[in-house]
Image (tube, rainbow, N blue to C red; front, top):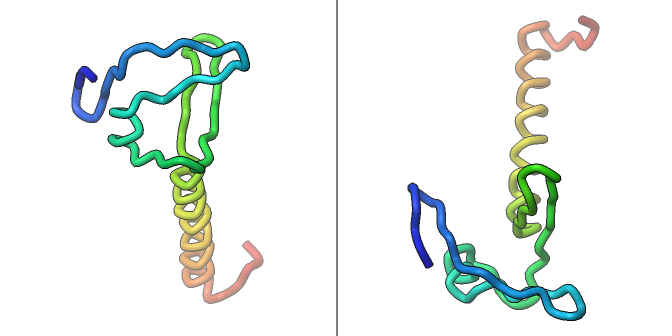
Length: 86
């Protein structure tokens, strides 16, 4: 494993098996706390390549993201005296 800039790593290369499977290097699993049975989401961009993220991390992000909308809505209601008609 090579650590580059802060919080950025290169974990080496892996081969794609005949069934399209790859093995995530042990060091990467340790750094990102990936355990057997964890669900991994795979995103792709034609120009930038593939990205992987633990589903639990995306769920945490989505929860915070939608909570921010709720807080914004509450703030707007408080500014308008509870009137939803803007």
